[in-house]
Length: 71
Image (cartoon, rainbow, N blue to C red; front, side, top):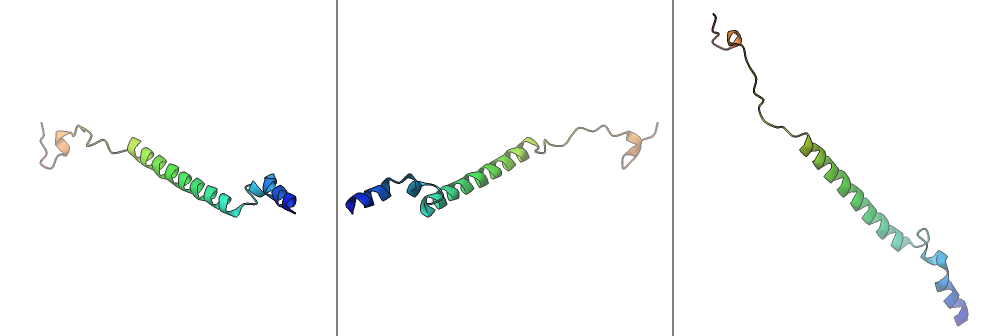
């Protein structure tokens, strides 16, 4: 009888991902956390690279100003 119990623990299917609910749920939890973290950091990097660089210098013709100047 003791020999039969030792074979159950040595069975590789018992440690398989699909047969161990506790190990698979822990793995899936950390996989989900990693994916969400990667998505958030990727979004932050994308926003950083496309950030607003400041007011551009624009040449405005004097005739179109609020108080226009004509030649």
